[in-house]
Image (cartoon, rainbow, N blue to C red; front, side):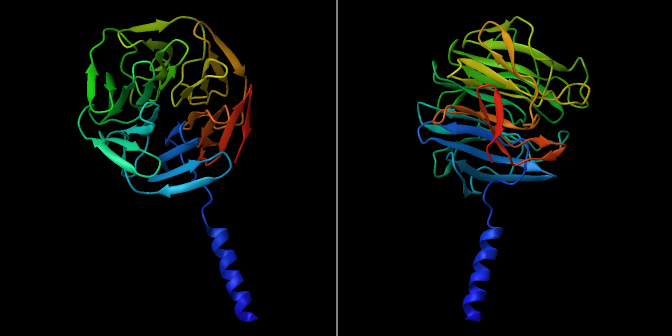
Length: 318
């Protein structure tokens, strides 16, 4: 009888210690696999520790897929390639902003394993963005920073190789900005960010919105969100609008609002939220038709919470 009780205690203790989801973190990468109906999360950092774990959320529970593939890193960028039904990841860093410890590798996640696709193409960087242009079948990379320098270059991945696009004008060098593909206008949008590596200033934090149509840049006009960095955006096909949430402002405070862009004008959808406001990532869950938010900061501490935006309300999922 004592043996049975001991074994039960061991089992219960093991279950209580089992990790049931990703640990607290910020600056991870997030994308939704439409074909498999899974939210995929990779990497990030927490209190100086860099991570390379891959997790998937099926709408009910998290499942850890392993720690192989890309090395531990902070602020990589990921996007879903709907034609090839894979997730593409590029770059990130594993060190301070003043150290040259950024990555320039391109990886693919097929739902079961990571595959290194290329180490050529865009120079190494972190805090950049990727977005997949469904109309032109291109993954579009913009901006970022490395070794204390901001970047303004534009690159496209065709599934085999990277090509730098030389386009006049545009958003200018920045990092910690947001990007998403607007399915309605069939353009890549870029919003906000910081032009200065170091403490933000009112001049360095941006609140402008730009559109890339595959041939040229165009600035979108109209009053909208205040200037901010550490921000993310995602397209909601149900609303047919681009969602922008939170972000960091030049005064050191976080923006607590959520905005929508309908292709012509901005409108506030949520005035204030308890969801993480900086360092989080957004993705659109096409299976359940909701916007999901993971990780980031809550009260200055890294978070492992998962939130959903249903209508005009943020709700804690897990």
